[in-house]
Image (cartoon, rainbow, N blue to C red; front, side):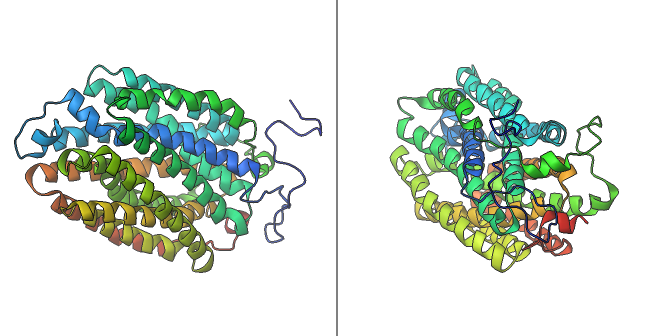
Length: 436
């Protein structure tokens, strides 16, 4: 199909600026605030809403399917042991490994088609989790849908990066990251304000609203000109993420960093609402307020991270953000309600900082022909890191304080940040220049 101007459906507008001279390809590129990038950010929002539901409602899920008593242990107060919760979350995270072949499909079928199809499937399964009869059914349904939402999030970053030039790329990646964060935040806010009426089942069922809106959003999602013009000739090859020998060292490096980041973010993000609701006994209204306050902190982090990524570079910005995420994660679980609020809000700031720099770096150091497959491998690395983090954090929390679990889990991940400096600095450079 083509539009009235004869362009293929999903192609970016032709009246946009072409690529910089350094790229030498004259791609049809768009600004970071263009409808095409905004639409991708809205798809990321839907992905965030679906993915974060398991975390936001975990306290209610544990109480519903567990057994709360008056003992002093984590299991007594939450309803399920830290190990059970950690393993369940690890299974959901581990299922995202299947996001690799899904993301890799985008190197054959296109970014737009693959991203929208994965988002729709993930939202359907998120809604299906609302009828889970027990904890492990809940885990299983989310585990089936998680790869689709993980692939959606990865491809939204790839699409935003490919639609824009270097001067706009960190901004576009920031906007998409903000969309994902808004979706995740909406889940938490809606659940915490309505958990006595909607419950976790009602919140998950709301995914159907986004599913209905997705076709309207999809009309503005464009196929990046970079992909359309540089689509690989090996269209029939397997899509399990093949990356040529020339770029495998870079792939290992970015995957190692993604693994380390997720060792921190997995437990820091996944246990927080169980901790707030079932251990600190923070009310739903206060928990929702915490999430609302964290939203502008995350936005400030995105703005600061975007500026630092363009001025100081992708590598130092990512390194500083990693140290901030670990430190604030330890603060979050240090044992008071004030520390919980401060750690969560400052953690959102650090998480916002890392998104533009690391997201742009992963996009820029690989060629178009394998970029979606690399994004899939990056998802796998993040999954494995989150699984390791969740299992360690859950096991230590069963025998010691959560603050100890945070230190044991987060601090060993920080030295991996040194590997960033073995990658080329991509600030101000088009991907085609680094791939040449």
